Image 1 (tube, one colour):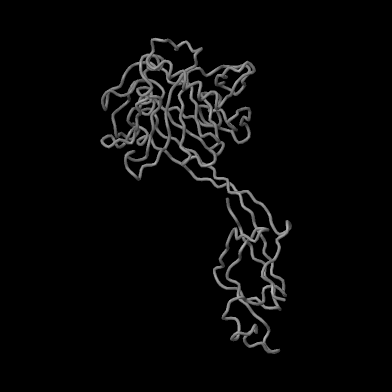
Image 2 (image 1 turned 135 degrees about the vertical axis):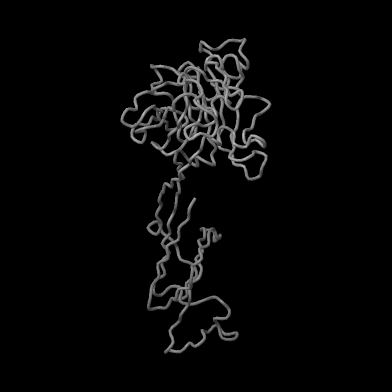
Length: 356
């Protein structure tokens, strides 16, 4: 019996979910501004954040890496109407907090919490925000994969280009990671899952210095980790001796972002791409699809198979599988790498996978 269509039942389809990961390394040389003449650091007239690219941002080859911003709570001791961009710094903090932390029972924006306990605990009222591009994070940042090395205090220990020195380095490096986040992440955020950023190695990671929101691709760091001198470089070998508090209160957001960029040694994490698939098992039983509707399959004007004798059984070659809706609309097409011979003496099962 010639068969043109065959119904796919629920037992012929299965749904699968696969997580793909890609390592993302970001070097301090790119963050500090490698292309100083052409500019891979983009500033905006509104002055509320700064963007870092992997290449001069005016180039068609440039990829957006992340944005940097600083802000503080209206309840912060640093907040003062005389500060440059004071309202914008408060607005940035509130915008990030309402998206990542949400509102309390009174309708007020919650403040970032050091250990994720939103009701009590130490609040992060002065923060640095790193908002990574979706191009890098994909669907989310993989838990327990994030590491960041920062110079957090002291005076310059050398110039540009040394083995252990990078542009903007102040003092020793501080290692920050989301150690043990794959089993200790938090879920009480409207933006999804997040982890606590800790200092030190895995064996001695006990100091919380920030938060990382995996689906949102945002890192929140407390400004208190930057003790001592912080400000942006004035020349290649000389640095502003202002403290982090002085920079946040006396400088605009762009200057604060410049100071932070000069302290980043490297950032590494694995992204995650969630691949959802539906696999259809298209089965051709021995009596199915043994004839072709191709005109060359017929003899003259008669509906008769060429070589239709008792000695020659019907034969066809499967090259394409089409998936149709109930309304007979073609939804998807699968092509075989080579034709498969189909006769009444064999059966075929073709595995068609749709990824989305």
